[in-house]
Amino acid sequence: MLLRSILFQLGMWVFTIPFTFLAILTFPAPPILRYKFISLWAKTMLIWLKWTCNISFKIKGSKNIPKAPYIILSKHQSAWETLAFQKIFPPQVWVMKQELLFVPFFGWGLAMTSPIAINRSSGKKSLNQMLQQGIDRIKKGFCIVIFPEGTRIKPKGIGKYHIGGAWLASQTKIPILPVAHNAGFFWSKNSIIKKSGVITVSIGKPIASDKLKADKLNQKTKKWIEQEMLKINV
Image (cartoon, helix red, strand yellow):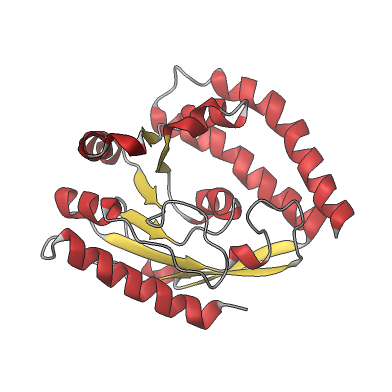
């Protein structure tokens, strides 16, 4: 298990470094085309993960995926979902902390995918930035991915669901797509070890945002995700 995990990590870096320079060359392309090229990195890593660590996934509720645009509010347990969502869902941008853009190679490529990178400590200013950039990304054809707990949570753990994602949905009037998964059991936070198995991704029915206030949307989303987590935890 350890040797397979190390092999995956080595292969990821060997592929990431040259791919980053290719990604930078796509800068003149329209955002959606740029994203589609850069997302090949994530899709390749999923294949490499399956080959080295024997980790695959299955999807429940794929029929619930609506036509874009929508806001994905998801559980966050590992780095796995940042790869897999690029295969499961249409072109997307992530709301993230801006420090991630300065990570060598990974962050440089990430910056090319039109993310909504915010300074969490700036309070109301960060919400306004998220709204302005969110509207821009939606107009360009992207879905928006937000992890409402804000950080990776251990399996069976529950973090505070921050209201930002629900607030953005209520402001833009586009639906929320709730997503639960158990990736943390196979690829845990801050661990090089990856356990073989099949990750379950469960997609709920879209939650309309045009008739509910942000706090009610947030509560409704949290309730569905956490109830679903009880069903798919291994």
